[in-house]
Image (cartoon, rainbow, N blue to C red; front, side):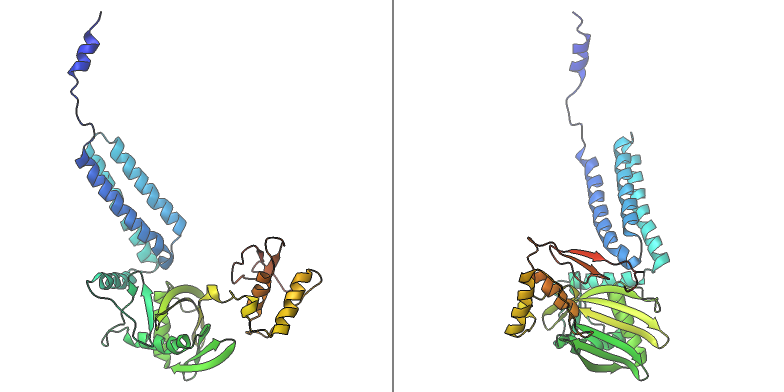
Length: 342
């Protein structure tokens, strides 16, 4: 009997084959990398960089770095390559961001984050003021000596009164004497504050930065979004800007996702009117035409009538240029941008 293999097996000493102290740095680096990637994923929109491509590149770098740690026969070399890829991918993102929109806005983001992390410090919007909210809560108002203070005061003049009066839309239009503000409540338009031209332009730039838009682009149309709180009520704002020879125009839609969420019973119809509409829905035949003056709730009426149908037993489709809201159970067909009127 050949006992050599048994002797060799006996010579092998039992012991740990995985070093915790070698795994721990890799795990910590992976956790830190994952946290940075989460921030980068959200920041790509503000940086105007292709989100999918950036994410694919970052995940690819993570995979390569992890494989190198596993395959390298020398642990120190593998870990060094891991760290180089970690720092290189992040540095590459910041370089691309700098070439697109710069890095100045990151200073404010960091300051806001620090303010939110400060112990015992909770920023609350003053009564009657518009508080712009970030990840850490309401962003603090600039100090009186801060260069951003006139811009902050201007956007307060534009938004505070309309939001306090439950406006659904706010427009700030360049005029001879400054930036003229108008807002709409239940389909009725009202005039509001007129802001001095220079301060008004600064106010638009202020909200564009918060809404993740390109502050330097003042001609082409842009759309962004932000969240605010006014007297304890939270709102989502859809911010749209567009330049003209007279200056920059600002349009703000308040809670756009809720604009057309009405039911027929809540539309303000008289009982006989509501009954007539419900009868036309239950008959399920013929053609029913809906109409309303511009800006008087035509889209809200359309969606309310659609919701009045039973989407489980009826097959409904719409043809819309730009659907304002997703309606459950209904197929909404979007017209091409270049479609002409019939």
